[in-house]
Amino acid sequence: MWKSVIYKEWLKIRWFLAAFTVLGLIDVGYIFLKVRHEFTFSSGKDYWYSILFQRYRYFSFLKYLPLAGAVAVGLAQYLPEIINKRIKLTFHLPLKENKVLLMMHAFGTAGLLVSYLIILFAFWWLSKFFFTNEMITGAFVSVFPWFLAGLTAYFIIALIIFEPVWKYRIYYSLTGVFFLSIYLEPAVTGGYGPVNPVLFVLTGCLSIALIFSAYRFRKGEM
Amino acid sequence: MERISRYILVLVSAIAAAVVLPWLYRMTFDKPVHVPFVVYSCVNNDFMIQETENGKQERTDTHGNKYTREEYEQKLPLMYTRQLLTAGTMPDTINGTAIDMHELLKAKSVFYYKPEMMNTPHPELYPLFESESGRANLEMPDDFFRITWRMEFINAETNKIEEEKSRLFSVALYKKGFTFPSKLVAGIPTNRKSCDEGYFITDSADQLFHLKMMDGNPYVKKVDLPEGLKFRFINCVDFKDKKYYAYLFSEDNGIYILTQDEYELIKLPIEGFNPGNCDLRILGDIFYYNVIIRADDHLQVDVLNYSDYKKVDTYRKNWLTRSELPAGKIAAAIFPVQISMTDKNSNFINFYIEKPSGFAWIIVNLILAGIHLFVLLKRKTKISRHFFDLTVVTFTGFFGYIAVNLFQNKLFD
Image (cartoon, rainbow over all chains, first blue to last red; front, side, top):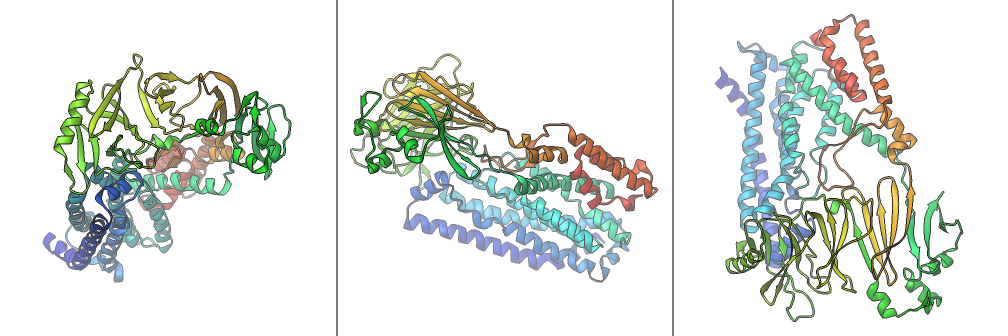
């Protein structure tokens, strides 16, 4: 039974995940194509200087990528469930409702995490050729909240889609946008260092947000 | 599980509200503080004050005398030299001292510090220039150094460590008693300066060292410090008079200068400066240094002699802070806390929490909790099931009230 549920989720999101991962890798590839171009046409020392002392962020192209991927995967996974209230079929399975929901959610989260890790690994691997550990660490401290913003967006999208009342969907969307802005403040490289652990915990807490609106959905709140 | 999920949503949306609502409030109601520009006049030995009142610029001294723009500029001939030369009103002598334009330009200096220069992620890699290249212009080196368990130079083109150079400089530091790693590395990491004086570095034992590269070799000088003196920030300067290398801020908020070549550490007679939350400007000329400290609630200008750094005069002006103004007082009543992700004194993103100054917010919180209780009683629900909501509203006021109504508890009744 569980295998079937997971397979259903896989069918819904596989192409979106694959497309997002490819897009992410293209994005990373483009970033380092630009870096290599600058190293060739200018010089390594000037490029390092601009990163270290002129606040140039060579990785800024990654900023909204995790968010876009999470929105796409979230919509692909949960929109089909509420069209004609198809999720009710899942709820009728001889499985605990919350358990099924969390399984679906965990699968989507794991899929996104795998995509994120592939993109981040490519980013780290290519960074190693051009930059020192200090510079890579600074870049990772900066991109970390962007990837957390992606996961948070995925969790909030699930919450919004399962919410049965349109009025509340709008309220949740507004709250979500405000909350996401915390992760996407303009900051210097490494500026998110002190707050990243807190954002990580908040993101983790939000992972079960959909249980609330799914409960309202099951109870038929109007 | 549903309840836990709701509690999390309530807390997260309360946090979001505590960030967004005060920000919207500030955007709507905040008024700028017009800080006067105050400097000491070497002509009439008094402070000259330029400030904006009702959109109009006013220029006065501490005795209330008003000045026109031209009169004001004539009282500050070392600041408005070009203008006075253009107008033909530049004096030949000031207080009996003949003005030598060469000396005047040499002594002129401007230093500007903001707390965000200290509260920021530091680069950890720095270029070490060749101090005696024999070239007119400084050239950017191919490598950058870090000081961890040793001093390492990394070539930017190859991203590889230059072993020989790293060993040479590490040994030179070690021989002078440097305890790795470094705590502070301060220099002027640009080739747009008159000459290179390398870096001032504090080690893990808070000792201060001067390091530069001369003809490819390390120059290391340990600076004698008084017992227990520790620095929290060092800002190197490149002034024409070459009197000192840097301004150094100690952990007990003292401002020091380190004289060039003699390495004499001189404490400036300045009180009330905290590099964590005060802006600092030091304007130097042939007579005086104007040390201008701007805090959230006051401006302080200390005037020091150019020659011996002795204090000549002090000016201070206080004003009401944002939280003391009507808009701030209302905000303090409405919002139990104000969270901001940014701070003007720091480049770090964090949850900066501003606690309310008064107690009015407690009343507002209790009123909101009362309203929430009234609605629950009217709905004839079991109050014990809403204990969490009532607690949240009591402690977080508007933020909690919005959150508990956004994620309603109805279905759990």
